[in-house]
Image (cartoon, rainbow, N blue to C red; front, side, top):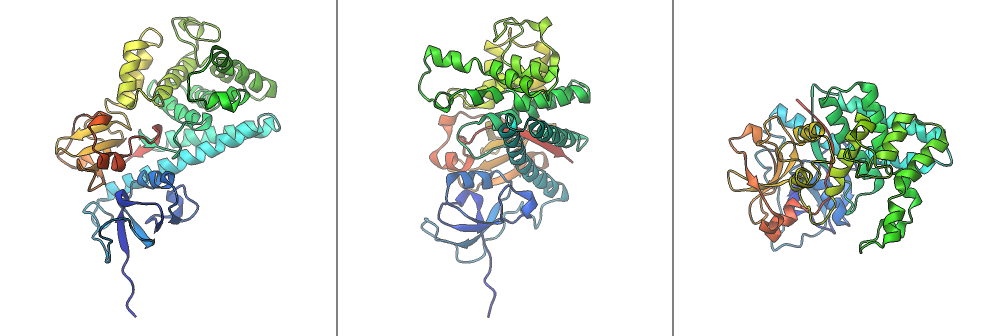
Length: 399
C-alpha cells in the first residue's frame, strides 16, 4: 500500500477546525505536543509567529474553493534549500517565542507565591532573572524579536517580561554592570505586582475610568513596594524600581514627583521602557514606530535624552512589529532587528495577503522602502500579517 504523501499547508492558510503537525522539535515551540487541533485564533497567531513556512495537514477540511490533494512543494526558502545561517536564524526565532512564554509562566508563578510563600517567590524570580541574563549574553550579538502570548491584552506578567527584556538590552548597550542589569531585570519583572491589589473589574475596564478608579490604579506602585518590602526578600534597589517606575525626570510623575537627580539609572531605564511598552497597547498608537515618535514629541522632557537614544538604538528605526512596504512592493511586518536596520527579518505577503512567508532581507537585494499605516492593508494582508496581535519583545541571538 502506497504511503500517503504529506500535505504541506502554508501557515497563512491556517484555519480553525483542522488538525496539523508542526515541522519542529517539541523543544522549539510553546505547545505541549507537535500535533495541534486548531480551535482558536490564538493558536493560529502563535503558530504564525514560529517562523515556519508551513505545517503538515493531518485532518480536517479547508474552507476554500480548492483543497490540496497532494504534496505542496515547499517554498524556495524552506529547510530543503535554505542556508545553514537561515536555519540557525529560524531556530533562534522559535526559541525566542518559547523562552518568552516560559518567562511569563515563571513570573506568574512568583506572583502567585508572593504572599503565601515569599521565599519561593524570591527563588523563582531569581532563577528567571539568571536565565534571562544567560540568554542576554548567550551570543556575541543579541537582537530583539517580536513575540506574543497570543492574548489580545497585555497581562502584568507579559508586560513585565517584555519590559525586562528591553530594559536589559538597553542596560547592556550602556555597559552597565551585571549586578545592575540583575536589579533591572528583577524590578522590571515585578514592577506591576501591585496591580494584584486593584480589583479586576477596574484593571480590565475598557470604558473611561472614573476619578476614584484612576486614583486606585495610581496606587499600584505603593501597593507593590509594600507587598515586596513585607516579604523581606528583595533589596532596596529593586523596591525603588517597583515604587518609582512611573516617575519622570522633570518631577511630573508619581507617586513622589521625583526628579532626575533623585532617580537611579536602573529605575530611569525601567520607567522609560514601561512608558514605551504601555504605549504599544493603546488603540490610537498601533505601531511601535509611532510609539517612538510619540515619545520624542510628548515625553522629551520626561526621560533622559541619553536613555531615549539608547532605546532607539536597540529598537532600530523599524522596531519589531512595524508594518512596512518593501522595495519589491510586497508588504511585511518586522520580526527581528538586524545590524542593517533596513534589512530586518520579516513576515511577508503580497498586497492581497497571498504568499505569506518568512524572509531574511540581508540575504536578498530587497530592503524596507517605507512604513505602512494600518488602513493601507487589504483585508487579506491584515489576515496574513495579523497587525492586531500584541507586540512584545524578547532576546534573539544572531549568528
